[in-house]
Image (cartoon, rainbow, N blue to C red; front, top):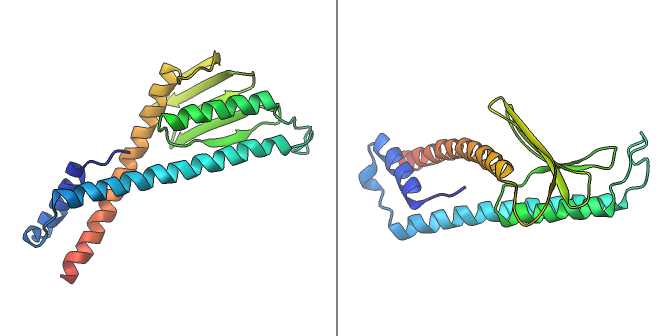
Amino acid sequence: MNVTSSLIASCIICIGSEQGAISKMLITDTEVSKAASNFSSSTYNYNSKKYTHLFSELYSYRELTENWDGYNGIRPSDDIISTASKFLNILQENLISSPEIMLSGSGEVALFWKNNNDYIEVSFDISNHLTYFYILDSIVYGEDDIFINTHIPEKLYGAINYLQNELSSKKSRILIENTKDTFSSIIEVA
């Protein structure tokens, strides 16, 4: 999520003017830029930590034995784990918000993002290939066995960005509400 100094300044001005206290608040461009930079850094660091956790979980699948789930579950092959790892690297390099990870009893590794009724899943069951599908605003689309190179398939990339923007909008509304509450408390104290 990109937070611009204009967005932060607008939030502060709106909050301050609602309270009739705009003259009490003086914030320089440097302070706004620093706040935006700190927010972006913390978001990036948080996502980086989530990716570290994802890689750890993915590599832990190598330790599984056959019948790992008690229902004759198959351990994913090293090729499948390597393929999923390669795709996670591509996601992380493109600053895509981290997905959730899951493992099926057939040895297939999958990544997914979910927000309300919207869902995207990317699965790996063949070396160096992925399969994906999504449900976004009741539109269902998918593609099978796409060779993984250095890029995210165009339609998948668009779907992930759409879902990220939806999540970012939701987070922005929460941030604005929380900021409004915080500044309301500060103004009441002043």
